[in-house]
Image 1 (cartoon, rainbow, N blue to C red):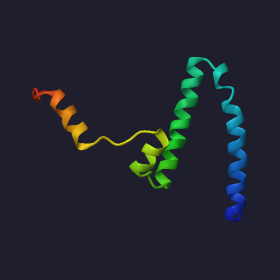
Image 2 (cartoon, rainbow, N blue to C red):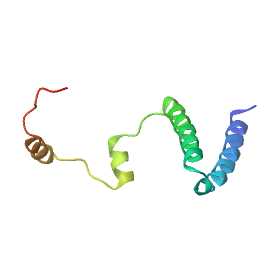
Image 3 (cartoon, rainbow, N blue to C red):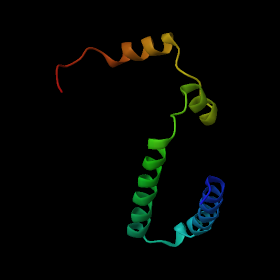
Length: 86
């Protein structure tokens, strides 16, 4: 099967999954947990074959900004000294 046909088939199958995910609210907690575990496995498989997002892209998607060196220094000062545990 040519690559374009494979991608088209996968997209059709994902549309079915998307429609099915709309029923998640009707699942019991145990059923929802099983579905979440499966989705996590699928996400892990996708991460194995795709390049990670740059931090700039992550911040853009989340609408956040990276911490400045001053922010980091202030946070480090609030943490105090290490207690030699762990």
